[in-house]
Structure formats: C-alpha cells, structure tokens
Amino acid sequence: MATITTSVVLLRWPLVSAGLMFIASTLNVQFRKADYIGLAVISTLLGLVAACWFATGLLGITLGDMSAIMNNVKEVMVETMSKMPPDWPVVIT
Image (tube, rainbow, N blue to C red; front, side, top):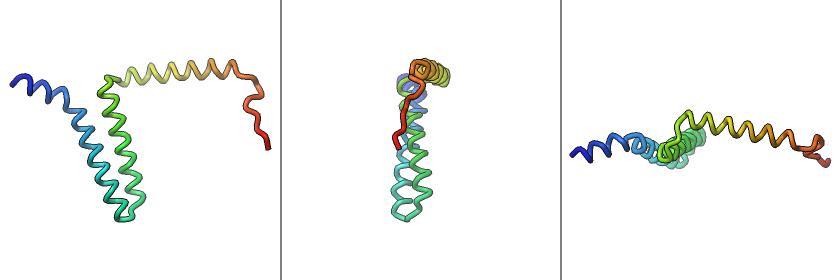
C-alpha cells in the first residue's frame, strides 16, 4: 500500500501534465473541425507548454536549473559575438 501511495505522490505532476497534453490535443482536433482556428492555435500552445512541463519534470529540471542554463547561453553568445568579425553577416542586395 505504501508503494502505491508513494508512486501516486511522486507521479502526480507528470500525470497532470500528460492529462493536459491529451486534453489540448483533443480540443485542438475539435476546434479545427469546427473551423475555430484561433482556439486551435491556443490549444496547440497549451499542449506545447504541457509537453515542455512534462519533459522538464521527467528530466528533473527545476527553475533554478533553467536560470543557470539561460545564464550559460548568454555567456556563450556574448563570447561568440565578441569573436565575430565586425562586418559579419554581409547582406547582398
């Protein structure tokens, strides 16, 4: 009994996000059939957010990790930009 309780407690957020992905997919299909393109786009975006939430939950990525990742991306971009030639990219018209 304790094993089942522990698994439900640990898996509640991935289960919620998986349910949200399913609901968003179902709504997307229904909205497209009814020619509600705006609502279909909104449900698609909600599905994408739920999928990202699901993936980050499974990988164990927290908001602190996201901050560290973005800081690292910023440092790499600044270093890369500092090593580029000043006339790059050249636009040919």
